[in-house]
Picture (spheres, rainbow, N blue to C red):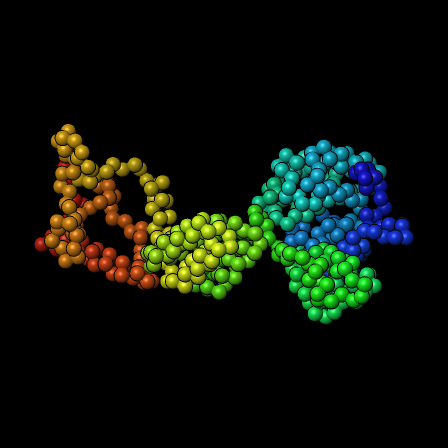
Length: 456
């Protein structure tokens, strides 16, 4: 069907005229009015934004963002019908700039006849910048009203210029009650019946996706001459796949949940998100790399063994692969979640990097330079350096009062250990050493001795 043909339809929701409707069940049950729409009460309930738009026969440029099977395409069509507006539908998977230009040309033609057009772009996140730019001016000029549908975060996938001209509406995965309503309609359309426990399984495996539910229900009805039992539903489901996208929002939401569960010392939650990611098809190597990061960022010196545990788990997975190696990663997840937490290393590293980037390139003090040649020794390299192991100190191997920063700098405190695990002992030792330094810096007069002079 060409764009022109589709645009000339009085309604994209008109049912086919054939006596036998061989469309998929999900398409046959597509709502014809907003009153039939299931879910999304936060934007479609009484007095909600899209309800008010529909009742007023108006529509503005918008982006519908939500998981698959939540009604984005249907909602766009219903809004177009309510506004009495023509709808041109493009799929970003198949369409290119040429298709966009044809759609705009068609919209301009009908604009001269006083008829407005909605340009609906499904999976708009798959359009690159050039393709999105192709229809941006026509949205600004009012040639078309833009409605985009996406499963990905528009903040990352849609041009800022286009995003600023469209309101984002977030659609949510359907609740079990919503899915039960959809299942009831499907059963009635198929003229069959379904056992209560079978419906519970159906709702569970649908995972918030109405299209998936109806597809499974239709397959189940084809597998039996009688009612639909739980056994039939399980046969229709086949290999269960939960909502997951190896490079999309769900992926990053779940790794964020795993990281925050480890940080929050919640081992059961951490293991849950770890298993969710594995079950959804995440690369265990990616999770392993993130665990290594967590060991330093969230635990650091409060338990230095955490880093080794994470490294060993990654090494074990590389040796064993899946599924055997996944157990080692799971062990690391639990260990990291259970041990004391400290972000002191993470904060110290960040502060030091920020300081270095904003500071001059100070020279290394002469006493810290290595005199590897006689010429360098003659220039004073290494003069005055105190070998810590030769020092007579109550703390052992510590040169009290020795300076290790550039002479232009005062003492810094990037690393501030916390009272957590081993780090509490590190904190006590550093406080003791700093106390010795302070004592050594006080002259008999009671005044600070000032910055140490270095002969060059």
